[in-house]
Image 1 (cartoon, rainbow, N blue to C red):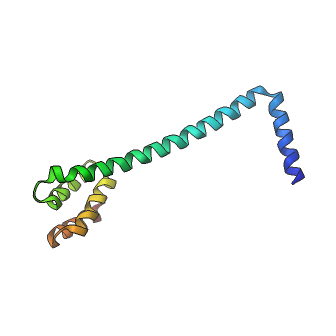
Image 2 (image 1 turned 60 degrees about the horizontal axis):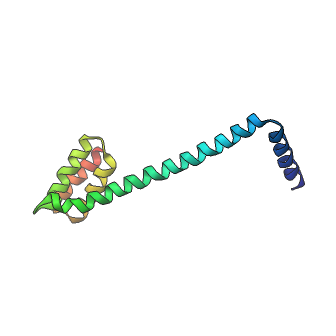
Image 3 (image 1 turned 30 degrees about the vertical axis):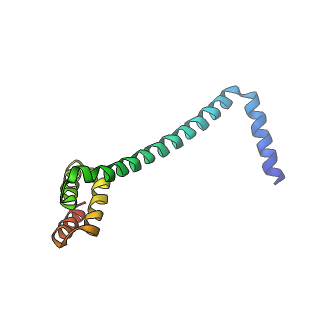
Length: 111
């Protein structure tokens, strides 16, 4: 343990004598923190988009919500938005009739 503390003290002393390295270390820490923030922000944006999609689905769908969801999933597959398409197809598998479920399974196999 004393060895580790001595190494840390030597490193801090070295940074005090070399201001460039101190600034470089601070910059690296800031870049890491910024990267972590951006990763969290991006993940939260994807989640909120999927939640908004669920809320708006009934307004778009009209009478047959599952058929519309299946059509939208096909459109998302064409647009290479597989994450949203998978979520919709899983909902079709839960709530659709046998024909819709079979179509959903076929589309999931293509992803």
